[in-house]
Image 1 (cartoon, rainbow, N blue to C red):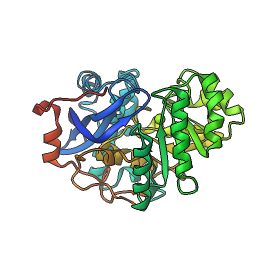
Image 2 (image 1 turned 90 degrees about the vertical axis):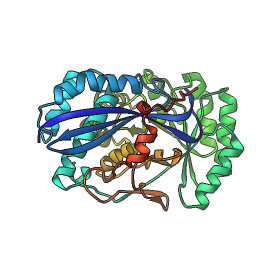
Image 3 (image 1 turned 45 degrees about the vertical axis):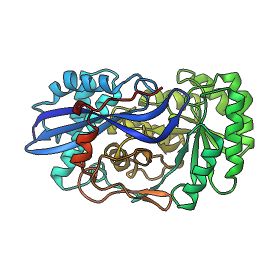
Length: 379
Ligand SMILES: [Mg+2]
């Protein structure tokens, strides 16, 4: 099964509402959809960025350039079925650039799984669950709007775990916003808070107990990703809430450093930040070995990337902190033909080979950037 062509296509899809994070306000999500061809068959993968090179170093434009110029040339002519060698070859050809590498790895897995008539989860050893509890992010930036949105999600049995995004404004005001939300949903939904690296250590020391006191069960990446020792000091202090690392834990080496210092009680896994399936599994294995809880993160993918993540997450025995694979729900339109099933507080593993989803050609063509739609960058 010799790879003969790889395409990287830029796609931009507007969100249903502004998504306000510590580092950007997103009105449109930017994607690179990767298509890998071999023996007349095709596999699809995706890299999503949130606000371009703001969450991490990579932009969609850079991801496409890396795939076209550096990854495709080393994979053309290679046997797609040698999945371990494919992932190693890509990692040796391109340093860093984890999102570009992951999108291609995802597509090659999809290709091989489809050609073999199995799901990507089966290719990875088999799913251990058919559904994963699905959290929702309250991130409009407006307390009343977030409460109304959360009530609607509970009423429709869509989500009963909420992540609140703060870190974009005054730390005291942000904390008050999160505390109000925690009180509003007390006893009915679990509340987590994601700082996206926004606070320094003294601010986190001062305000984490307030969040914990309001019932916030988990605080995600309160400190900058380089401050692993600071995360360890926060974790060692009885703050009353779980500390989770996200931006700080991408590679297995990051995971090991966090475990050695006991810098986090939980790790957020993301296939793209870790550069593919193999490295994400190594991060998860280190977490398991250290008794660190797993969380299925996302970068607000379309159905393509969401399904790619879901196939891996379903192979784990347990995600202690559930997953946030709700990306398609935040988009005005998804680009896949049949939407992923999200109901009864969970996302459900699709049936069928590969990632279990296919692209809707009309929607895909409409949102392709090279078809002339202007891109609206995050502010
Ligand atoms: Mg995060």
